[in-house]
Image (cartoon, rainbow over all chains, first blue to last red; front, top):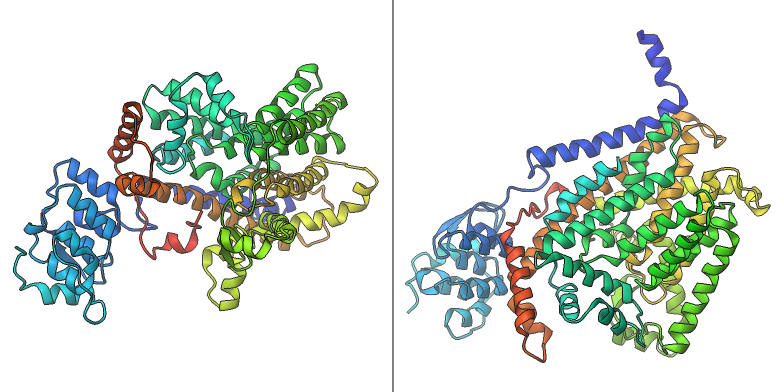
Length: 164
Length: 461
C-alpha cells in the first residue's frame, strides 16, 4: 500500500473511530508492561528495611521481615520522603515514633522490640509523640509546645541517654 | 480478550489475602454443621434473606481443606472469568470495527466504579460479583435460541440470585425488559413464572417470614456533601424517611450515569466549588459523562421509534434494557446509595454503551456529527475508561497491602470487636491459618504518598 492510499484508508470513518479505542488499548498494555518490568514506576520503590516498612505504615511487611530473621532493634536507613523530606538512620521503634504511629509502636513492642536498645526512643516520644511514652515504660506527659519536626527531634535527641 | 483480562486481574487478585473484617466472621458461621444447616439458619425474619450467599461460602470452605486464600481468591478469579466470557458473549461482535470496541467495553465493565465493590472485597465470596454473573447470564439466556431448558434456567437463575442477595431481584428486571424489547430466548410463560416467583418471594419474605427492610438506624449514609451518622439520619428523616429514600434513588441513577455522587456524597461538585479538583475525579466524571452523553444522543434520536415499540437493533434493545435495569437497581439503593449495589446497572451501562459504539463505528447509527469530531470524542472516552481500568488494578495492589496490614494488627481488631465468648479451638485454628497465609505472602505494596498513581487513579474504591 502506497503512502497516499494509507492516508486515504486512515481517513475512513470506521478507521478514524476505532483509533481511540486502539490507542486506549495500547495505553493499558503499556501500563501492564511497566507494572511487569518496573513495578514502582508509577509509585515508589517498596521498603528495603524494617524501619522503612514501619515508616511507610506497612506493618505486614515489617512482620514478614522479622519472621525472616531481620533484627527488630537494628538501626537501619529510611529514605527521604517517608518520615520527612530528609533521610534517617533509626530503629523500627524510633521510626514508628517519628511517624507518630501508636498501633505500629505497640505492634513492634509486642513482636519483640526492646525499647531499652533504642538510644533515642523516649526522647523522640517526648518531643514528638508523648502518647507512646506509656508503651516505652514511661509516665505519660503532655507536649511542651508544638510537635517538633522529625529532623529537629532527632537532632535534639542525638545526645540523649538510653532509658533506664 | 476475556480470558486475558481475567487472567491479568486474576494475578492481582490471587495476591490479596482473605480479609479479616467481613470475612473471618463468615468462617465462624460456616465451620460447624452441614450445608443444609447453613442454608436453614439463613431463612429467618429480618432485613436480609441471603441463604445461598452463605451456602456458597460453606461449599468453598469445605473444598479448601484449610488452604483458604488460594481457594477463595481462586474462586473469585473463576467468577471473574465467567463474567467476562458472558459479557463478550452478549456483545455479538460481527465486524472488525466492532471487535475494536471489545477492549473498551471490558474497560468499562471492569473500570466502572460500581464494579470495584465486586472485585476489591472478598467477603470471602463476593456476592456482588455473583449477581453480576447472574445478570450477564440472564441477558445471554434472553438472546439464546428458545427452548424449555432456557426457560427453566431463567427461573432457576432468578431464584438463585434473589436468595443470594436482595439486589439479585434485578435479574427479573433483565428478563422482563429483554422480553419487552423483543428478545424471545425466554418464553412468555417463563417470563410469567419469573414475575410469579418475585411475587412469591415478596410474600414469603415479608408475610410468611415476617421480614423487614433496612431502616435508618442500620448504617451511616451519604447526603449532600457529607456522610450522616445513624443518629443524624434518624433525627433528620426519622418522622418521614421518604425524602431520604427518594434522594438515594435519584443519587443512584446519577451515580451510574455521571459517576457522581459517590455513596450519596457529591464529592466532585464539592471539590469544584472549593476550586480543588482532583485529577482522578475529573477523569472519572468526564469519562462517565461523555459516555452518557453518547447514550443520551442515541436515545434522543430513537425515542420516537421506541415509543411505537420499534426496536431495530441490539443497540436499541440494550439501551432500553439498561434503562429498565437502572431504575430497578436504583430501588435497591433506597436505604443506602452504595456503589457496589449498583453493579448490575453499571454492567448494563457498559453493554449498552458498547452496542451504541459498535453502531457508530460501523456507520449504522446515522450520525449527524463530523467523523473527526466523533473520533476525538471517542478517543477521550476510551482513554478515560482505560485509565479507570488501570486504576482498578492499582486499587487491587493497594487493597493487598491494606488487607495484610489488617491481619498484622489483628490484636487491635479483636479488642475492638468485644467478643463475648473466647474462641473455640477450631476458630483459633482458622484464625491462625488465615493470619499466617496473609503475612507469609509478602506485601508488594507500591503505593507512594503523592505518587503519580495516587493522582490519576481512584484509590478510594
